[in-house]
Amino acid sequence: MTESSAPPSPTNGPGDPARGGPDRDPDATSATTHDPVTADPDDPDPTGGVPVQSVGPAGSAGEHTDLRAVLEATRNQIETADCPECGASVDEAQDVVCGRCGTRRPAVRDHVEFRLGPAAAVTDRGLRRRRNEDACALGRIATADGEVLVASVCDGVASARRGDEASLAAAEACVAAVLTRITARGSLGLDELAATGAGAAAEAAADLVRHGDPADPPATTYTGAVTRGGSAVVSWVGDSRIYWLAGDGTSQLLSTDDSWAEEIAAAGVMSREQAHADRRAHVLTRWLGYDSPEGPARARRFRPAGPGFLLLCSDGIWNHVPDADRLAAVLASGRGAADVLGDARALVDAALADGGYDNATVALVPLDPADGDEWDTRSGGEDTGPILIPLDPDDDARRDPAAESTVDPPDGSA
Image (cartoon, rainbow, N blue to C red):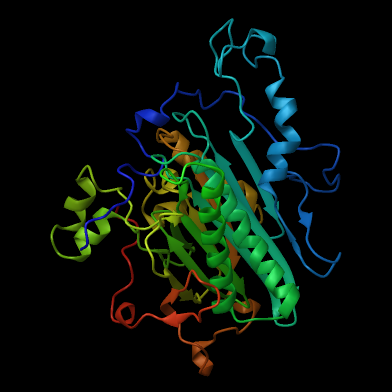
């Protein structure tokens, strides 16, 4: 293994004093982003976000969530609100706490929720961090071959400045690029769409260096998923994860962390348990940003045997609940199969109940082979399995020969 030049701390992980902050009461009121004026009155479970934003010609280019718009729309309301604990005016605030009772004041990015059709996403600051540096985005668009769903979850690297900007730029660029490419060129293969999303995320994160110190560029992890017809391509860079969660016993971890621990374990230097117990376990070996290592994102084609959900999540989720079967059990104990937003909340709540040491973000995207035959291997369709996704969208996605001979990644024993 080549010695990593990655930032020396986990992404917003425990033990990072630079990102420390007062503990938060899990029952305390946090920032919300629900807009009652624009919410659908017929929606029995409205999200905490603004309505999805239209892109391109109305009705032809799909729709997507817009975290940036949520933050801007609610900034004044939240930043000028009275203290939720004692009612003191914002004029009495001292930095981020109430000057009268000392309660931490809510921030615009503390907690945001989205539901877009059958998919949902929730991001939360957690109980220990001063701010939320995770981001999430969802999109969907109808094509001649069926509806395409796209999702992204990114986690700003804590040891780099402006990680919150990097994660937001990458997640939203991924979704917007996929929708824009479909609008411009029509129905495309999932490999190409995944490459488009990953490449756009990488470019957006790297471009932030133009507005800051080149010696300390922003950085972020990345996960992306593009689905259609019961099949998916998932891709990742860093240690945010992608899981398959199902009630039929097939739940599994689909991604492999780009981290010191995983590389040491893969090289046979230590067992996976020993590597993950080491203080260097979470040091990243890949990330997105101006100074990111060259090379493609790792990816995987996936088609399940039955219905379930793709879970994209930051390490603030899987550090608390790493096992795929346990994550699936959280969904089973949620608010019902039809309530995808409730399931997303339940996953975040599980991390908070276990301590909530980090920002916690999830995106849930349903996948059901009954929806189509995009890659039906039983009828001679495309093989599923590991591939490489170039971060330069002008290159072709290609299968990873080395990855083909490997077994599936372990399902969450981090």
